[in-house]
Amino acid sequence: MEKLKPNEQRAKKAIILIWIVLILEIVSFISSYMQYDLLQTFANGGYISPEAADANDNREQIIGIFCLIAYIISAVTFIMWFRRAYYNLHQEADSLLYAEGWAAGSWFIPIINLYRPYKIMKELYVKTKELLQKRGFLAQAN
Image (tube, rainbow, N blue to C red; front, top):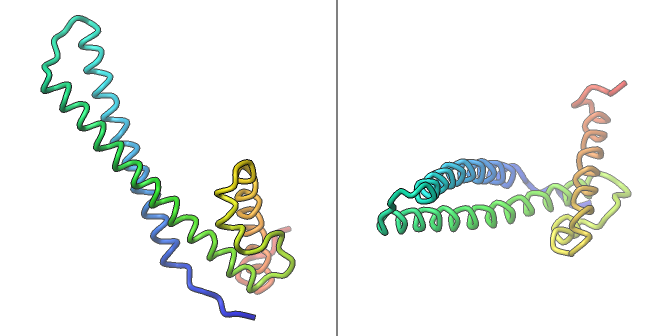
């Protein structure tokens, strides 16, 4: 049996990146509201200077680029954590449903990516909970 590999740093990075994505979503929401307000001004016959329109477009574009970059980095970081967690579970539990590589690969195969990551996550949760209960780290469920 191989040794467990550390996964705490990956988990911390994934959590931080998920928070960053959330913050960027809030910023994007505020920026979109500002754009909506600008468009309402124009729709009601108000004047919008070309500089204001350009500034709005630039702000929306920059926020969009930051969101895209954050989404990609966050997804990669999460999948790295997910795969390592499933690898470690393979070292401790018998008869898991899928090979360890599916924890990462299942995200990239059309149709399969709609259900297999969920099944792996559910198995990861259930089997880990069983192992912790068996070893006395969690109280037994009634």
